[in-house]
Length: 437
Image (cartoon, rainbow, N blue to C red; front, side, top):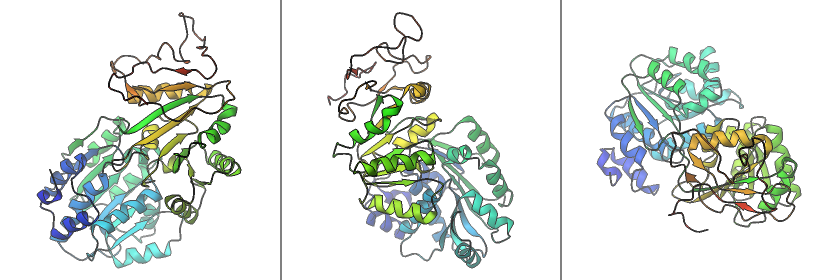
């Protein structure tokens, strides 16, 4: 599909897409939009940043335009569930942008803010409701929200919702939905437990997968820096001496860790803000707005933000700590290299995180370029040397490369590779076509 005219969308939607600067549909849009306009249930699997929101928003808005009826009081014609407040806000904004000038009532419902405005919006009736599961269930239990007139049910980032423990809430929502509805599941990954849930809730779904499961974004150059745990903060500060790191996301595992890292950067003269679940919604929105405006070079976040941040121009993602769940790595580094741009991902790995790194490489079927900085107190290396390389035999058991400090030498387990101080370890499988860096 060369442009959006071929889908048969209503003229106002094509105009809105054109005004937003989109000319050619992305792969997920090209495959999903025709099926959704034909009324099919759908499972969409695509990397973050590939246009999933427009892939379901456009056909839904087209249906609302071509089948007009009053928005149901206390409910909505369209229900979209999202795992985080930030992602819910962004989805709602996408609906507003794509329906600019059209008389649709669109609202967001999530926790961390007073109930009053949400209750008023529901009472008037909505065309599109974007919600996090917990707050929506609160409104349903209070009999403020009813879903009996819902025509479209969308679950976005389904895998993260299950990771965050929303299964019970999702099932509670589904119990109140009408049996006759169109169901859409969108996610970057689709593990077995999600397929089981999809089998329960979807009717004869079409599956659209535009990228291999757990594949990292092609335009992201990845690098691992082996570093002693106590030196991680110093290494992070040294990395920021590179002026190209002008808009950088830094990920930590814990809320307290995010605050500590942000403080360390601030003390080093690097403007930084922290965002995590303990921050109020107002604090989170102000931090995002400041980072988006370029007032801070670094935004330090927990995994709550791994899929909820959609900010243009993120130059680097730094994993101060590797995630406990390998899939989260894919979502973290997907915050850069969006909208056709290139990006960089740097991960600091200490001795306690070797198993986490192995899980990431096994999941993504890649060997990530590594630099060994253990015991080194000099300047940090220039960030990101070359792209990760795909393992040529992905279905075989994972083994670390011979010159990787994670692998024993001469068949003796537990004997670490002893690289010279500051020496860079070469990637195990360097593709011949990889550009020199």
